[in-house]
Image (cartoon, rainbow, N blue to C red):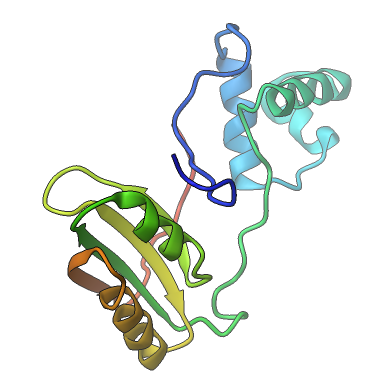
Length: 162
């Protein structure tokens, strides 16, 4: 449906039929806290040997249960304005979704049910840049209503599970 350059992320079962056990979940929690933790550091925290941790982490990566990646510091990158943008569409989704996904300001683009078709998060240099981004969205063919909610301050951003 969508072009190849768009990454659609849907909840899917792991590549294997193996259920995650408590050790897997502990490893995942530790990797969310620090994706650069060494196998030596992880071993005592999850009750495995260094070799056991290495094997488990490798399997979690191979089965695409986890992806280890870096999250940039917005302030260091000069990002000072964050917002959620809600978009109602008229007509087909694909052309608008492709245009929005191609814009570097958008960090999350999600199809939604309810009053809006898309829920998006943006990172902008400043409020002027945010206004320019909103104007660009409003000008896209097929876009109906656009609503933005600007973040005044991010109090908590946490991806820990359990």
